[in-house]
Length: 193
Image 1: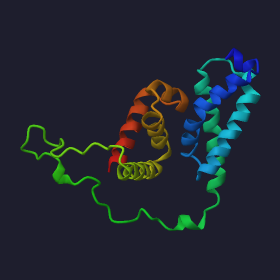
Image 2: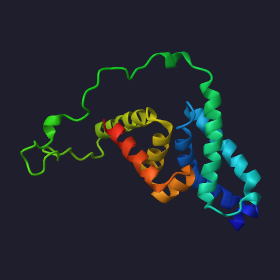
Image 3: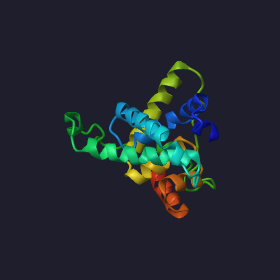
Image 4: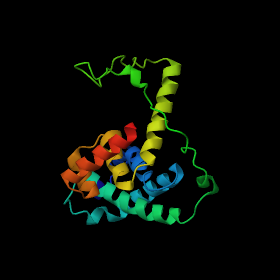
């Protein structure tokens, strides 16, 4: 922290490199595109530079930076939502829903391990086809997360995508531990569907 306040460039570069990817992913929960998310992150870093001397240390540096990001992203997202792109008028996800995993792959109700894998999924090796499937799966998961209500989307992104602890999530989102658990459970349930 002292290095940042002293204006040491290497310290700032280290913090930017560590936090920027996660910041872009979190900003995407509020704004419509990656380009806008990257702009919000840049604005956040400017805000951090301008306000580093006013940082009182009542929270961690990470929490403080992400709170600035969320405030800016929410403001920008509200402004961006006032205009609707033509492409948003068509819903590509409005197709008949099918289970993502064939139900016959699970053990039946008569089995002591009912609901468990009857035929477990195969390992995803470094075969090009498998890497493509992995990217497609990630895209499907990201699309499912994007359909969640804002608070659920924030919690699942921070916990499951970014790997934050529940305490860190509670501090940044300013929610109770119980509320965070409920939001995470609901988000995971909806993404699994």
